Length: 291
Image (cartoon, rainbow, N blue to C red; front, side):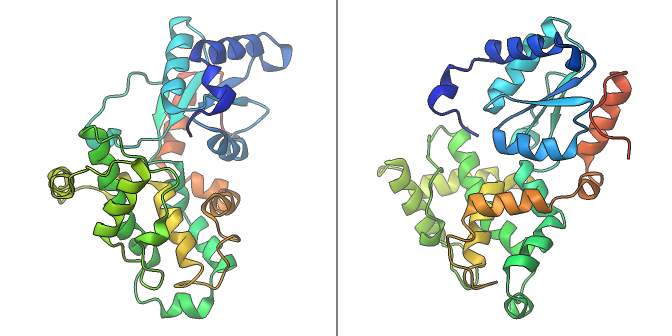
């Protein structure tokens, strides 16, 4: 969900202007506009909203999405909402700046997919029944347990300004392909190398990670969907299946999860109810189909 290439020149003002121009076109005068963080999020939203009543626009990152919303609100532009990943906002106690800004139920949209029955559908399709039955632990719980360690390191990196780089992290260097257990020392080493920060102090980082932990935190807020999917990708090659790694690369798995996620799953979420409340407050604008 990062900006890249030409996208760096796509400013919040540019996106806000595009939305204004669209609203002036006859086919969109009564449409609501849903601002999504990135193009993969937008693909999911296009499956969930009623396209005859709502148009999905891509902001290219979370900051842009929030800024586009602010610009349009200052204009008193009606019928616009933005849906962004909660990330660590819930844990940090960040207060949302607008009733038109809605957050995911969990850390991000990908974790919402993994929390839903879409995970079982993907396991059924790409896993081995025998291996899944023999796997001693709950799969979802195991993914959370391993991914939370990366989650705490991501959070510590943000909070203590480590500026660590998590994109392109080779999970197979620190995740056991049979048990899916995560080796914390190898994780630190891999992240240090990936971030080109050889001087990162591991004991201090661990202490800072520990300082963020409480007994009451919901792991679904700590864990990042991309991390869980990277671990699932390793699992489907060995612990839970016999796929070759190309078949179940994280971005491919993410696509399978999006396709497996049904409107019925979405209707069970807090985010769905938030959108329903938004529709009540912003009549006549609609986002969801009246199922």
